[in-house]
Structure formats: C-alpha cells, structure tokens
Amino acid sequence: MALRVMKFGGTSVGSPEKIRNVARRVGRACEEGDRVVVVVSAMGGETDRLTKLAHDIASRPDRREMDVLLSSGERVSIALLAMAVQKLGHPAESLTGRQVGIVTDEDFTRARIREVRGERLRKALDEGKVAVVAGFQGISPSEDVTTLGRGGSDLTAVALAAALQADVCDIYTDVDGVYTADPNIVPQARKLERISYEEMLEMASLGAKVLYTRSVEYAARYKVPICVRSSFNEDEGTMVIEEDRSMEQVLVSGVTLSKNDTKLTIEGVPDRPGIAAGIFSPLSEAGISVDMIVQNVGRQGTTDITFTVMKNEAARAMEVMKPVLEETGAAGVTADDHLAKLSIVGIGMRSHAGVAARMFKALADEGINIYSIGTSEIKISCLIEAKYGELATRVLHDAFGLEAGAGTREMDL
Image (cartoon, rainbow, N blue to C red; front, side, top):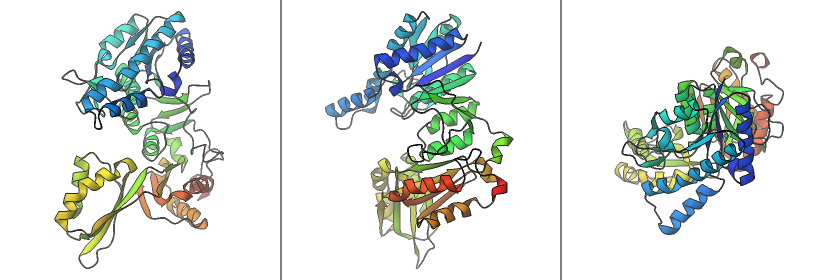
C-alpha cells in the first residue's frame, strides 16, 4: 500500500466538472489500494479576483489581512473536492493549513515553513480517509494565517510528502512533464523521463514554469521523489529525483528562456574595496534577488557594475540603491528590460569540456549578440536581445541534439 500525495493547481479545479474529474482520479488511486493526501489550490482565477478586491479597497493592503483574504480561496476548493470524493463512495475530509499543522514564520504573503506537525493528517489517513488539504497556507507561531507566496501549493504538497515519508508526490499541471525546452517555442522538444533535483532547480530558477524553486529545494533537502504529470491525461510524467551516474552521460538536459529580467547598470562607481558590498547588501536586506553580476575593468578610479533582477523588482531595486549611490557619488543607474536570459542546463557539464564554445558558436552563427554571461557547474546563461529569444532557444536545442533522444554525449564533442 503506497502513500501518495497528489497536488492539483487552480486550472485543474477551475470548475465543478474539473473538480469531479480530479475526484475520479483520486478515486482510482484509492481503488488501487493507495492511501491518498490531496493538496489543491484555489479555483482558477480566484486568487486574482481576491487580490483585485483588496486593491479596490486599499492601494497598499495590509499584508496580514491579505493572507486572511487569500487563504479563503483554497478553503472553497478543498470543501468542494471533499464532497466530490465522498459522492464517489470514498470517505474524505477537508483540512486547512492550520488543521494539518503547517507552521511558518510571520513573513506575511511569502512565509517560510518551519515545521509540519501533521497529527490531524495522520489521524485522517489512519481512519481510511482521503485527506484533502488546502495548499499555499499555514499558521504562524502567534496563530496568524499565513500564505507561502508563488508556488505555495507545490511547496505544501512537497512538505507534507516529506513529513509523511510518502512514496511519491505527484504534481498535476497543465503540461504532462518536464521538457527539454518550452514546446510552445520548440515543437520538437522532448519530454524527459527523469531529471535531477539540481537540474530542475536550475531550470525552475531560469524560467521553466513547471515547478517553483522553493518546492524543488524542499524536495531535494528531504529526498522527496516528485512526478510532474498532466491533470488531463493518464500519460507517464517526469520524475524529479536524486542524481545518478547515468544522468552524467547526458551533456545538456534542457534550454530555458526567461523574459522576466531587467539589467541594471550602475555607472561611475568608485573603484575601491567595499563598494560592491555597499551596493548589494541593501538589496539583500530588501529581499531582492540579484543575478548575473558583471564588474567592468576600472578606469581613472571608477568602474561600472551590471547585474540583473526580476522585472517586477527593478523599480524597488533602484529605490533601495538611491542612498548608496548618493553616498558613493556614482554617476547614475540605467535599466534595460528589452533583454532575455537564455540558458542551458545539464549535470553532465561538470565533467565535459567545450560546452560554452559550442553554445557561443551556435549563437554567433545566427548573428545573435551576447551582452552578459553567467555560469555555474551545471548551467550557462546569456543575456541577449529579447526579440531573438525564441530563435536562440531553437538554435541551442538543435545545436545540442536535444530532440534526438539522449542529448549530446561526451563523444560528440
């Protein structure tokens, strides 16, 4: 008898008929002998509707009250799904984040999980019930309702799977797995049978929209096997698991494209020790993530520092930096949001040479200019003009033979 956590997003529970479809899938798992925990998001569009209501009332809604408001969407979903499962003859009980004991910090609208107690959840399972749990929400030590931010329902599912030591955590989405590239950009993109946590984490952080980074980080920490699969068909999905030796044989697993980055350039920064810390420390304290940092060679006592932030955080980043720029006497800061971040990812890159050269040559052959480069052990990212993003994705997908089956191997270099 397997213990299975099944997570369904807003599009999967967006109407009564879709909720009934989810209930039938849950029922089949029960009939196969599995014990089942189901995690669901708010019905499609509901969170946006509630957010709009809040902004109709207040231009800057209180974050604590936003969490109280937004958490109501999942309560609707779990009650309706529990009813649908019960109608099929399977005992089911709906549970909120508070009831299952998901304890978080008090950072409202983006809380982090501290522990999962799970007594009520285990009791429901021991009684032979399907536990239908509200994703995206928890409770603070002071008993305030909190929400987990983007991808919070995925994170809830993985956290529950870790706490229960579940056999698998199925993440049901509107795609049927993880692909070598976005199939909307590259029609020849191939679904991967499996991918390592590390690769999935890089792909998620670089623009792949299948899983969110926090859920992958949590899964990697607690070794939770994730299966990404479609809500709308019975096809096998993609397993996200620990790395094994056979994975290293594949040079590149995927190509990602993100158009959500803004390049900020601080010009005329005094070229002396401590300046970089003075710029990036306030950004870190403000919770603004920075990527692809480049510092030019200093000339006549000054230098330029370029880095990227998420597009929706660019204005706040510039505001946070204002006092530092005034103190240092920097010439100013410019922003460019007409760029795209193009990346290749693969754990095989650790031990194989020539990857960067192949990537840069493929782009050069198409006349695509590179503005910045960032690397890690298993990824190479380039900033290019956004208008060339989709073409460049197809070019790299072809250059590394990702449509062929196993990807480019060492002997091909």
